[in-house]
Amino acid sequence: MVECGTGDPGTRKDGFMALINYLTRIQFDRGAVRLVAEELEALGVGRPMIVTDRGVRGAGLLDPVLSAIARAPEPAIFDRTPGNPTEEALEAALALYRKRGCDGLIGIGGGSSIDLAKGVALVATHDPPLERYAAILGGVDRITADVAPVVAIPTTAGTGSEVGRAALLTLRDGRKLAFLAPHMIPRVAICDPDLTLGLPRGLTAATGMDALTHCIETFLAPRVNPPADAIALDGVARATRFIERAVADGTDGEARWHMMMASLQGGMAFQKGLGAVHAMSHPLGGLGEPSLHHGTLNAVILPAVLRFNAGHVGDKYDRLRDAMGLAAGADIAEAVEALNRRIGMPANLREMGVADEVLPRMVEGAVADHSNPSNPRPADAPAYERLFAEAMGQARAVRSRHYAWESPR
Image 1 (cartoon, rainbow, N blue to C red):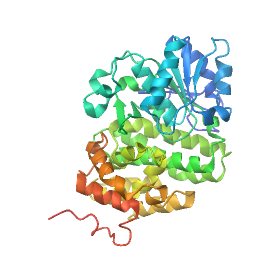
Image 2: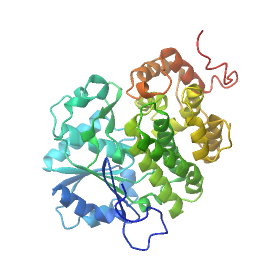
Image 3: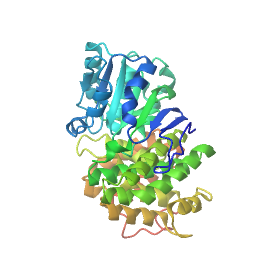
Image 4: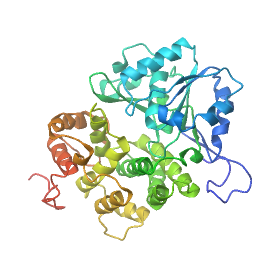
């Protein structure tokens, strides 16, 4: 729900920001980062710990946050978030949180920093071990309202973690698991598109495809949630219209605004569930080597899953075509592949360094992943073997819409 303002950049004359209440409290507008101090005060947080990474800190993106909270005690800062947050990083951040007597967190950066902040908020208030709170191990109901308050400030337009109910964390044994519950949603999201103006071209493309994938995949999920579907379709339209502009010119403020909104919308909508794209990207993201970017994985995997789900989603592909500005009957998977090429995404997983020998383990991970049950077409191990083969580039020469995915008779 938009409390004030029109929600459209360049048309508001009243000076108000768009305050949105949907799942959580969201401050969205250029310059919104200046509100962090009053949001912390409203939450009763007096000793926050900032969770971020060295790239964000080196880019100066912490400066406006530190300026906004300058009158408070100097915050603890954990800036060693890895590309895919790990149990080891979580424990190091928790140690600092406890040493400094913190009572809440600010996650600033991409999805990794925000997810790590959520993870600290969980383990700071819940008994170990961490594993017992994983969704696929029955942990959802074990996560209580005692989770420490988190203010999430995204500096990329992709993950939607600032309004997501999950933290994705890689355990010591390499499993990338979701720690998921309504109490894991940050208490406040501060979405300031200006924080993305310096985002490099490649990261703009990868995170933008992450946002687009979230919107597409949650729209296709079979659970009934018309508000989420409407939000997702609007996010699809924004992302497909503005991603190439944002990649081509990182200083394009209008494009950055719309891409951050599309990212937020993906996060709002995927409360409904995701699907096979994420079931595949999650175990791949748990690999120690190579370290694989989640948004890039989603971009590369999405076309194969779109082909797999064709014919199992009612009229939703027609509605997707409308949102994407495609002609009636256009091949959506081919349109995504063409978009990937234009913005510089890899052609397949092999180009990203994924080796054939890890695929059996990836198939097992995909079948067990929490996103698998909400794929519109049921996917078992043989289906994931074929999906991974196509995403690796192996099936390209022989694939046809009917041959590659015809159902067993």
